[in-house]
Length: 131
Image (cartoon, rainbow, N blue to C red; front, side, top):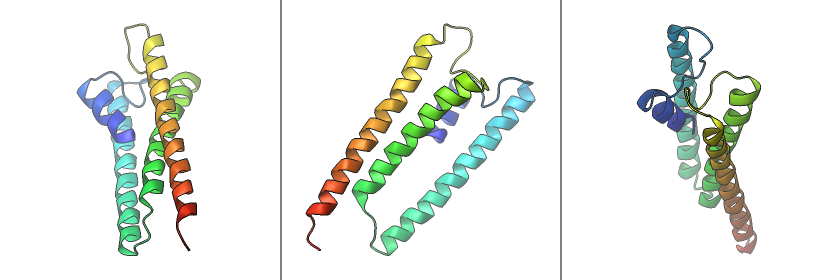
């Protein structure tokens, strides 16, 4: 989700930077640091995913639920903590942010709900398998 946020909202739409409370140089640096951390997390995740596949231990339903739960958790954390509590940036500037805030946080809650449903389904499927 951090990659989607960085690419879509920071780079393509130019709506905000990770840290908007300083100079444009600091804002670009903060985007670069976010992008670096997000890429490191993606690479580490792909290595872990490949290792699970190699060991034939990948539970696909759990992997999908984890992806949605992680994306939703990032979205909600970003929307509440970064946008409202710490105020490091807003979704967009120069407009009434209320509909953007609602859309941002509701999208995160939908991702969390989908992840929760997928996790419940994966757990039920795991209990039905013969040992």
